[in-house]
Amino acid sequence: MADPMRVRANMQDGKVLVRVLMNHEMETGQRKDSTGKTIPAHFIQSVSATHNGKTVLSAQWGPAISKNPFLQFTFSGGKAGEKVAISWVDNKGDKRTDEATIS
Amino acid sequence: MNRRNFVKNSSLATAYTLAVAAGLIAPGTVLAQAGWNEKAFAGKNLKEAAASLGAANFAETKDVNWGSTPEIAENGAVVPISVTSNIAKTEQIAILVEKNPSALSAAFDIPAGTDPSVTTRVKMGQTSNIFALVKADGKYYVATKEVKVTLGGCGG
Amino acid sequence: MKSLLCAVGFGLVLNTAFAQQGADTVKKIEEYRAALADGNPAELWEARGEDLWKKRAGPKNASLEQCDLGKGPGRVKGAYAELPRYFADADRVMDLEARLVHCRMTLQGLTKAEAVKQPFGNGPVKSDNEALVAFVTAESKGVKMNVSLDHPKEAASFKQGEKIFYFRGGPHDFSCATCHSEDGKRIRLQDLPNLTKTKDAQRAYTTWPAYRVSQGELRTFQWRLFDCFRQQRFPALEFTSDASIALTTFLARNANGAEFAAPAIKR
Image (cartoon, each protein chain N blue to C red):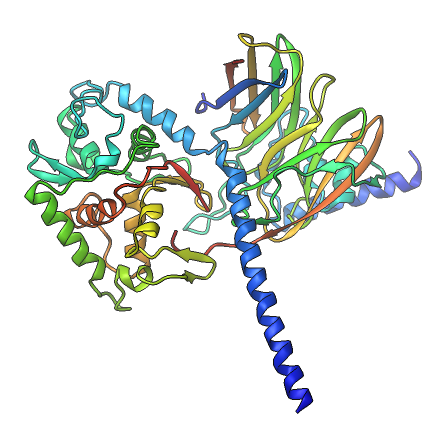
């Protein structure tokens, strides 16, 4: 399984502020290595965030998202102690899911 | 399907094939997971990408707050983009970089209960306009912001 | 006569405009850096480093939790702010990276070759050294730099580092001082700290290691020195060599009194 994300979920002004740092190369497929060979594309294609079984954000990404992606968003209806889960799938089918407890 | 749409879709397919042949899109990206909007991410410019996202046309808007999106990015590899839509019933926010080989960076679906606001970081090949394509109440809008990209020298 | 005056006046206005533009640009780049401060990818290295610190590894199947970084076995908090320092068990002044090599060899049983392998990461090829450095340095964040030169070997290391700083060599006859001993200098768009002045020296040293955005990697101080030597067209600086440690002692000591602010984020 891929390297873990760093997920933070904090109550802020009555809503849940979610900040995620993902561990991913986000290789565009346009770079070449020192031998001149193209480094194959390897990037996260879909992201989803859930809380209490409900999707609170979903996204499709392309290779233009920076390496070690950062994502921040805010949703209502969560409270401290509950969990937020973030998942991603990349173009090779690799996946990762990590959770954070809302503080 | 009327003739205009047919022509539009054909040119999209041609553009994509040409792009792959030209090496602008590595064959690897064709390894798309189910549900990934390959066409949209292959779109060379705002119009093409927007069309693949379902936006046949869009209105210009200033009802978008760019938050901490900087005017100058020291390094184009990591450019923080923050988009908050102030348009009622926002359901989708897409971020596009005009001068990138493929304009579309990301498309977010905003369910009810989630703020119409996202922050992420994108790669910019050069100084360019950033477009925020917003879908609200079934209609599409585009806001624009220019971000300059400098490249730091050696050292640091 | 009139046209000459006009020309001079116009020239003056132009200069002011450019100067103002320069100041604005600096401010805007500061804003860019501030926007990246939250959610520093360095945290991904810190998390991996903490795992490596606690994980049993090597032929001795031991963790690094008994590693003495100068404040006693296993005491990580504040340790980086006091490095480099003299270690009696090795009879040598060591910086953090040299000390980690030492602990990986003595506690975990790695050979020297294994312990110094892959000091710097490259995309999917990760470096344990970088992760461990990120973890240990994060535990000194906010702590005031406090490098001691009480031990004669520490004092000697400082003196040697100073000598290296001013030593001109290589095909360009560069020394560190060539780029780093004057105010207001830059290479292309990169401002160069004047390391002979306290304020710059403090700010420069306390912001390494850093997530280097242009590389997409967390880079350590050994890497910083290695890359400077490369740019000076010097022979490659050997990882954790006495020369690299001496230079680090010189620069770290000159940062004394400043709050350690790394792992930071840089272009």
